[in-house]
Image 1: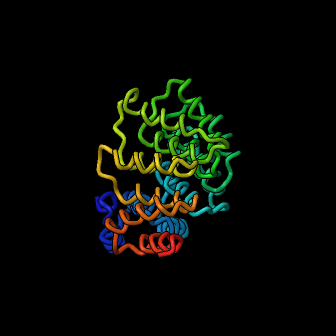
Image 2: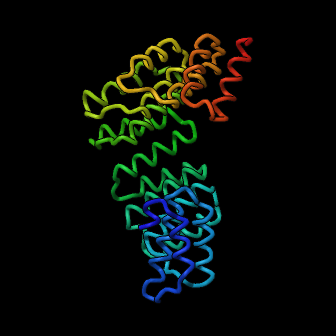
Length: 282
């Protein structure tokens, strides 16, 4: 329970109080490893996994394999990923869709999109996580056109996108070889009209990033001012970043002012605003 609530310090205390019965040992070690992985502590997860193998304290099952594969992808540990992949293969875990998705994601995060694509093609079945993982890999490597190609195949296959899909696809338009802002805006509108998904701040932040990258900064700022929900700092930060790309001092100063009002104590905010004001000569 502690690991799922983000209380890893409490879980760690309980874990090291041990000992555990032989029947529960693997379950508890796996819970801790998954907890670390889930709560953004990949180094701790991998360290505990290695410790469990040295002590022979845990049988690596599908759940543990999936967690460790994800950690290897996050940390970019190439050798470890091969070992876990081989273990999953020998243990017959590749029949599990979750394990296959984890392997594909791991390879894409480790800059090996060729193997990630091969795994996707070889999979007997796909779920939305499979499709999102492949799109995410292309987006991670700034291959916007390839990400959009996967999205097109998804649509043709009749796969219903989820909220993660839309964030990835909208963001991918920033990394296309040509300006496809109009297509991106149409997709954004279709979220509500076709898929009945209300855009959140995260979607607006992604769209502002796309608009800002390709140039229509006035349009991006106007959209922020007309948002049906309260803009958060991330939206103004996206606009400010875009102003830096295009050296737009006027819009940049307004974005910096909004950002400072929202997060006056945030060091990164102060640095961004300071850079903008120095560029504008203030």
